[in-house]
Amino acid sequence: MKVLLVFPKTPGSSCAADIFYPVPSNALATVAALTPREFDIEIANEYFRPLDPGATHADLVGISVLTLNAYRAYDIADAYRQRAIPVVMGGVHATFCPDEALEHADAVVCGEAEGVWPRVIEDAVAGRLQKTYRRDGFTPPGEIALPRWDVPGGEQGRRFKALTTTRGCPVGCDFCSVSAFHGSRFRGIELDALVEHIRHLYETDRPRFVFFNDDNLTIDHDRAAKFFEMITPLHMNWMSFASLDIARDERLLALAACSGCRQLFIGFESLSDENLSLFHKGLNRPRDYSRAIELIHSHGISIQASFIFGLDADQPDVFRRTMEFLEANRIEQPQFNILTPLPGTRLMERLRREGRIVDNDWSRYDMNHVVFEPLHMSREQLQEGHNWAWKYAFSPSIILRRLRHIPWGRRGYNFVSNFVQRGAVNRMLRHLRRTGHYPRENLLR
Image: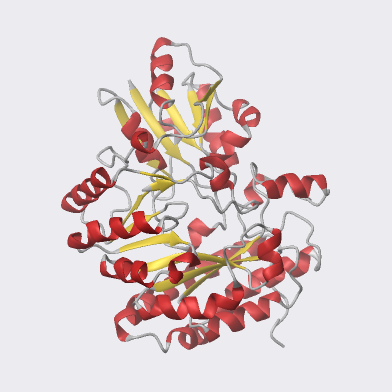
């Protein structure tokens, strides 16, 4: 029996995954690890290679569905089902919109795959697929599967490997579907098994970077410190998502740097205390941002800083103030998102109650399109300000201004990555120009 695992890409999308290097999701490799070894497994990640459903044989197709790629996922599923090949959908979007997904699939896996996917395989072999599969509660730490990369298609993206070492985030931001999917209870893979997996990964593939795409790698300081100590002898380079809380523990920062941390992706989200309180990210305190950035930089770690535009307290000057902050604090790699009410989030529930959602086209739920009514600016102002922020931050003069004070040890990588991102940003802006969403004014005047 051949099992094909698919991660779709939205044609012409302008999502964040297209702006930065294509760090591969380990969702499909994790499902592959849960599939019995006697099965023929193939991974098809369209961010690396387009998939032609009409030219690909499989006995069972599993599709990982995000909101922004839902329509492409449905097209792929329909094509296989027309050939009488059963399709199973999973992932965040399928979990929170199961009835919609079932219009295009034979079965839907809601939530985490551990403890569920083996039953799906068994039922598929027996020809008795159920409509919905869901485990009770969340996967215990000892049952979280480590990804399997030794399957066809799994070797894609050798430069980067993605790895989830923990699940669950207690912060609970209103706009985050990840914490809604994985829950608020922090769960970590047993460290000895995890480190052995990473050691084997380096011996076989030698990736340039490992991206720990945990919901929040450092939320448990003691566990993170022990983990960093254990991977230090591997002499690896790694990046990760983290909260600003890491800057409150200089010992943890030092251990992270020593173990090979080169960059942290941090959700600053806003410069407004009111916004952070409204959207339940009180862990962040804007008055502490500059000091936290200084401490992280002092350990030789670069920062990829994420900001959200369109939060309820945002005024039209938010774009200019954010640019000034980035330049003053020498942020190496900024990222800008438009507030997006994803299915499964408290944000979507609230905006629906308030009648503020104005666009239900999932392909536009990519954090680069306005799909709701902001409170203190027009939809056009929010869209144009967001587009302008990308264009301004990645203009050559501003890149040079942000990076000119970086120590030589970090300067080369950051210069290259910023100008690579500049090319991706320009492609995104061309896409937005074609759809009529492009900045028309200089917001710094």
